Length: 344
Image 1 (cartoon, one colour):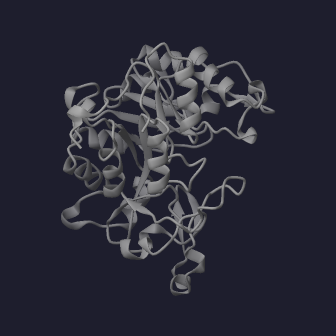
Image 2 (cartoon, rainbow, N blue to C red):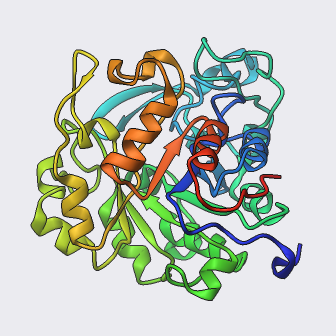
Image 3 (cartoon, rainbow, N blue to C red):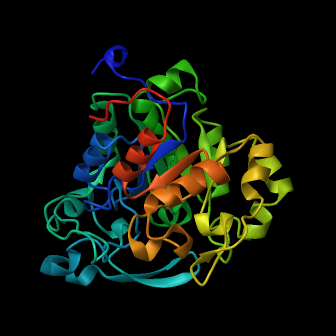
């Protein structure tokens, strides 16, 4: 579709980032979940990129297939279970890197959480990075993409590409193939918006030499070191490190309970991470916002809109990863002084 005739990306309020699609309603990272998120008003659709045994790039969160596919029901794959070191943990299961793309396409995806709608289990395939990009480009308005270079240390250990190419090289090649380029807010970027995200700082630095697309450095819980450099949470959130990484990234994506700590399901006083990031001209896109009561801290009175209001208007973040795109979109529309946007 010609971009000239499409409603542009909104850039006047914090971004609604559809975490693995509208996965509160549909199985995560499926075409249906991404199309639903676009219908519900997502600014960006977010995905995790992993690789198959034969080097195809796929949209899938876990390095193992066990939790959200029917792989265990395929007798022909019964001997494929393996044990590998994944970020220092011996992990046993059916790994994406031991299956070809044809074999992965024979599997069907299911909802991760038992308390969410199960009626779509077994109906959708794993999709490729190409298919994901096509969903965004085929939308009736400009929709950004937000792909993650997922578990790059593990993928580069287990998948080999011709000519010594790395996982990161193939990732950027795919973005370039479809015309994704340009620095943040440039004409090229606004035409086809994209953020590149990763928990691995060396991957972000590596791809910064290949593309000027904006990058987001994801930050895990306080107990989890970086997978590639083994740096602590405290080191990578220090002023010195933020001043270093800002040369390569546009922002950070922290786990929200590290920005505002939680004790016994009650919020504690906010840290100064958002203020310090903003002082370095870094955006802050925390994750993950979920509507269900079990994910809402008691301060929010079982009301996701109170949570959105807290983060957008008190903490002042620049974007939110949400499992419920429609909820965030409705909240922003009802609290916005802008003209209503078209969601389809």
